[in-house]
Length: 332
Image (cartoon, rainbow, N blue to C red):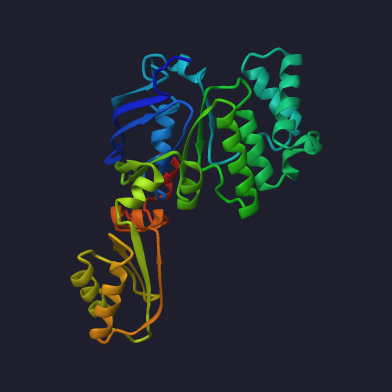
């Protein structure tokens, strides 16, 4: 491959009617890394990925894949990328082997080569025993692995994964994470979208946080966590406590706005140092604010997201769209 970045994008824009689904995003994905795009449903992650994969036209801005312009040379770009969407694209009535053979033939492989490639991929993804079973009998995790295998028929150097573990149980998610790490070890570059903060934390070398179509932050998971403080004081307020008073005390003593979950009485306080936790606790005691539980920990990506966007990663934080709009936009 060339020494160019796997993905280089500047000022990407995509509009649907009056909605600016992607609003001036800049990105650079380095070769050999896992680059995570983190955001809630409706943030614009899938739309951006589809633009980079040539599946949607770019309304404004520019994007290149290994130096190849996405708009002017889409056919060359498609030879460089593999795409796994949020939902399995396999044929329910065919077996696993037949599906992979078909994908191979569609991508120009001779019949014997397509069959050999199918066998190799089924072995790589632990699907040998299910090779001759119809997809309708597969579990969700098996479908996701087969879908990922299909995107590797031609061994592309760049793979786009759109929420690859959505709907999977924790054990199967872990298996998929291992598979993704293995692809990078074999020389692939991975760009994945996710709304799972732990997934971005576990997998990604670098993360871009997307909200309302804009990139609001970018960096390694550790850099993003440090941006909201070096430690977090986690408090659980006693029942009946004046939560507004507690918030005011914390803000005065710590000089930072705490993140409060009113329903549970939990409060996260970003701190410059863990030692500052004592000052906050003393201030709350002097104000007569009772606490039922307390701990100090490193910040999490959950806190990063709350601090940057004002809502958690499961909440799009924007007006609901009609089902027609969702079907049209496929913005996630």
